[in-house]
Image 1: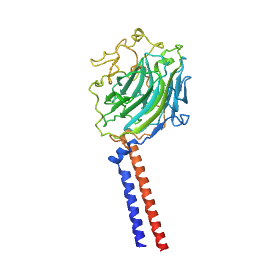
Image 2: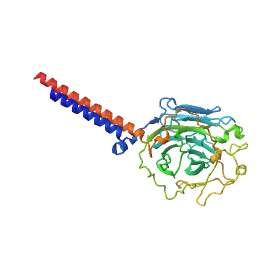
Image 3: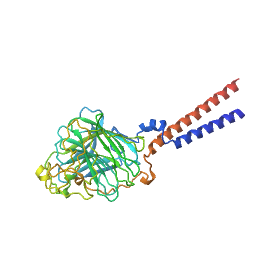
Length: 394
């Protein structure tokens, strides 16, 4: 009896220790191993977008799940937006995550009949914060991929920096990966963009608005210049279509204050204000604005010496800075400030988060340790039951 009691007590103490370690783990090998935990993952094989809590369709656009094109297996989400003078958005979005570091991966596909458009078509954005421009944008401008980063500190105007991520390949499934550490008052921000396994862009510095509403991820189609309020009328072009598949978000565990270094060929982001929070007016923009029509935009400061709006395909990311007069539109003024009316903010307030919030890692590590503890208890009890059975038999 005494031996059984001692074994039970030892088992209870061991389980308590395991659970305590799981609750207190913040860094170390367990946290690193748990960094592969995926808090969000959707390959659309369910045939719906039900796991996405937000959907935004302005006009007669549509979001469907269909057989994936281009020889891609399984299903994919198809976003459609007609050129009817009313439609300008077809998107779905995830819930927010706490401020921290995450890897966002997804595949997208622009069909062969995609029509080049000189203003930007946003296909992915990270949005968060009341009355803000998206913090990070992936867009198609003419025949190039571009990444825009916006931030605002205190009462200063919104800052923007633009990166050329290379040429667009039509009829090709693009495998994207964005490693993002969201900036806070105490955490340097960073972004590393990869396309088909190769790094195509890197941003070091602020990339959010330091608000309590942490950014959430949107995918789909959004053409700000197609808004009727900007004077747009139907251009009579075929509907715009993009496909998405294999979307996931994975928590990362970087060393606080040590973001990935930018490649030497990357120009430093400009800190000069690129736009205010008031959108620039656009008067009757055509489906494909010409350079002369773009020249009617309010003049802005010329780009810096390191700026480049037509980086070669082999370039990494190049900061373009403010748009010069006569250049193609697509700066922050083309993205209207929007009120964040979503009420399901599941992120903790920014003031409660540390340099790199590890809540997802802690939950994963704690769950794994809890499972290990329960398995240990089960094995001990099974062994004790076997021993008692042998004693009775003898």
